Amino acid sequence: MATRQRKLVDVGLLILVNAMWAGQYAAYKTATAAMGPITVSAWTFLFAAVVLVPFLLREKRRSSPQNSRLSQFRMLLSSPRRSEWSKQDITGFVVIGVFGLIPASAFLAWGTMRSTASNAALIYLTIPIITAILATIILSEKMTRARWLSLFVALCGVLILSDMDWRHLDLVGSKYLLANMLVLLACISSSFYNVSSKGLLRRFSPLEVLVFGYVIAVVVSLPLLIGVEPLTIGQVRGYPASAWFSIMILSVFSWGIAMVLWMFLLTRLDVSQASVSVYLLPFLGVLISTLTLGEKITSSMIIGGLITLAGTILITASEATST
Image (tube, rainbow, N blue to C red):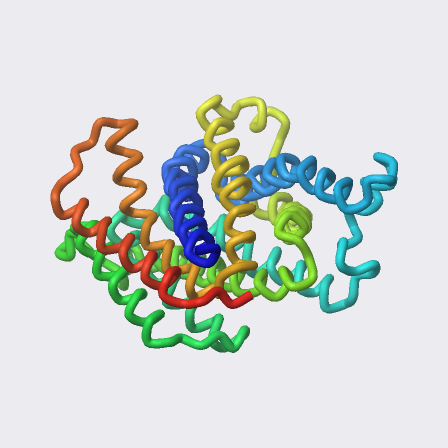
């Protein structure tokens, strides 16, 4: 019974995480209308880190309740499981910041702004597949028949749901080639971040992996901002309220609460298992649009969403967790 309840909790959390991720595309589009993609990413990671630091301090306080507040701030750079950071730890955080977080956010913002919705949607379907391949290579995870079947079922469901206009797809045409490559690079970076984070989660808590990674991403973004997207106080003051609201949506939900839950799930599931749930994003996005914007939902959307959900449940419930 305990195992069954745990699997139900995992499925529920996967749905919740993807529901919070579903709003990031509209938020990115709104934010990039007022500021560049690197600027959007830098603000997002900065605010996400600020939002999560109090929770990390609370985690430290629980592990060492006798320490003062000053000691707790000093303890931010120490893991509850390790008293000293190794070169491997430092390298790991730099790698996920430079090759995972920054490209995953900036390239997605830049690419979706310049590509068509159909192109971006089709390219985004590669994330679970890329993640499964990287997890097999880097983490030696095994792609069982059940996992491939779940991946195939979820993919079929999302294709039915999307009701894509195949006639207007242009993945390699000169007009959208650069934008599509940026979206693909964002997908690869996102998959790489998930796989690389799994290794860090063996030595650090989910909150530590997120906060330290975000801080590094902000620091690395500074020279990029100076060289590519220089900021002035006047520009910052000129950002509309809608842009700041979008940044807060990205920081608090997409890269904040959702990522905390996602990291927690990665401590309970293989990366290749959890990544199949990404196919729930289109379905949840449709539901959100229906509830908030009054958009119509069709029978094909319902059928595709249910098939996608079935694939997620299959890969989560059919195997024992791998922790």
